[in-house]
Amino acid sequence: MTDHSDDIDKVSGTATTGHQWDGIKELNTPLPRWWVITFYLTIIWSIGYWVLYPAWPLLWSNTPGILHYSSRADVATELAKLDRVRGEKLAALGAASLADIEKDPELLALARARGKTVFGDNCAPCHGTGATGSKGFPNLNDDDWLWGGTLDQILQTIRYGARSGNPKAHEGQMVAFGRDGVLKPDQIVTVANYVRALSGLSTRPGYDAAAGAKIFADNCVACHGENGKGNPEVGSKNLTANIWLYGGDEATVIETITNGRGGVMPAWEGRLDPVTLKAMAVYVHSLGGGK
Image (cartoon, rainbow, N blue to C red):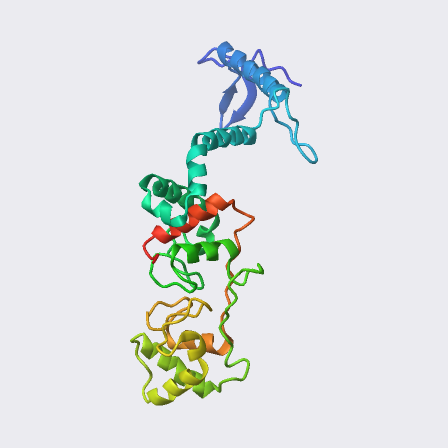
């Protein structure tokens, strides 16, 4: 290794490293002593941190550290403290009926706050953070309910779901009239236009309203009713409201009639405690569309 300590820069009086770029020499300027001391102190501090706190990843876990610190444990402790603070109120919420919660401003505020938080954690991925829904997922802000919009009906739906596999879940399903050979393609087009007309939407030229009404009466009345307003007992849609779960354009309505629909709402009983389920029902009911 070449010693360049005797190669002194004439301008600065500092030794050089021997490296040059375009005639410019690199000075071998020593680091400030305070910086060097600070650097070594940080190394000592990091070693202490490795010893005291969880630090190094292992095959299945990590080094726990002498202090056995855990941020998850801190969160659990804080949540436990919060539950103790809310304990009496939550107990009152659990003991009160849904109707009583609606009448008590304090319990109602608590139920809405808890319900909103849990909704964001569990329901927003499907229904949206504002509960406005999306294609295939109902908007919970309007007044159109497949399974009923009363407090008790909403709680029933949240608790057991729809087509969730739970024995108490809602089980109604839209028949695949085309796929199952119940209706021919031209009949499906006709009744699709009749359904659109029930909501005040336009129909294609030459549409036979009388034929559409007959097809509807023969095949759809059993679930949707004679006036097309639906039936929450079987989860059939109100076809006069112009509110569409999958879309109200002709092509989508034809697709629905042809292949049917059967979305799944998960059952939350067993995943969430009874008080939280009750709070969720109150929150959803208060969004603006509860009956």
